[in-house]
Length: 364
Ligand code: SF4
Image (cartoon, rainbow, N blue to C red; front, side, top):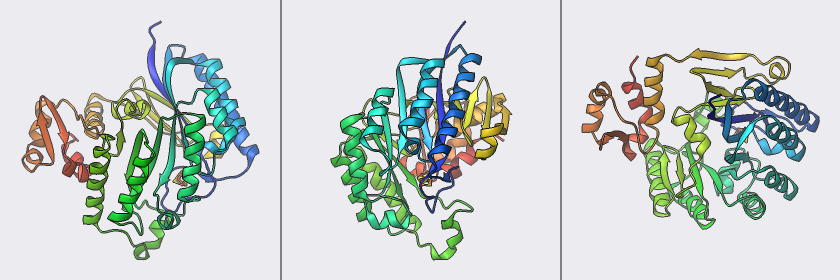
């Protein structure tokens, strides 16, 4: 039987408290019985996956959320037992866990190490405590430092931090401080996301009372992130992701390079055998009978549009078709896109307006 490499995404839909800007599928929950029930449900699905798909070799596993660290050693033990007992896991599989400051202690870190976790992504968002409070995060910068120390001493040096720009109270100077703090810690990877006010979130409901940096400042912030990280050899490889040499996230690259992955948990997406599907954002339903929210067979035209939408997010861009080159010509003239050595890719100026340009480039 011919085998193929795939990624596994496991969504843990629990958080201590919802952040004011967040529209990921996660519920406030501090109930350890619920964590155990959910972990057992995921473990059962992993065992079923192992039986049904013996041709799959997993070379990346990613626990995302929510706040995966909340399920603790017990939850991870249940899930990892199923993973190693039922799936073919590559010897050099990248295993990432997302954690939030204040949710990891030494014993959980030890459990990560024993389970083979070799990459940890910490949700920092900002090194400024006033900005963290404005985002309604549960932690301070000093909590982040404690978590960083536990992870680096016990689990791995392959640590990523998430930061945000365009957030309330942020200035160029405070962002510079956040970046300087990360560089001092010698992080291997940084993800920098622009705040987007999502419908239905508390930030959305604040309306005009929510004061954010203006558009020009947000553009300057993205430029600053690029310049500062680049200067520290943390190179951009995707619009929002920066890594030292050898530390790009293999799992996330699968999304942008249209490789296959299987997602488990409410709201999790999968792309396998030419089909994209996702599970309903409903924990109770998922625990009883998981239902699809989306199930779509990808046509050739879909595939080409995805290659444009996802591939152009990457620093290296994509090899363009003649039709795409033609559509991109005005953006090339205006300096938003470059065409060099048979590849098409965004400039930094282009990345800032990439959503608009991508919508013009795809073939409806
Ligand atoms: S910790 Fe992350 S997933 Fe949870 S509410 Fe905050 S942003 Fe959303």
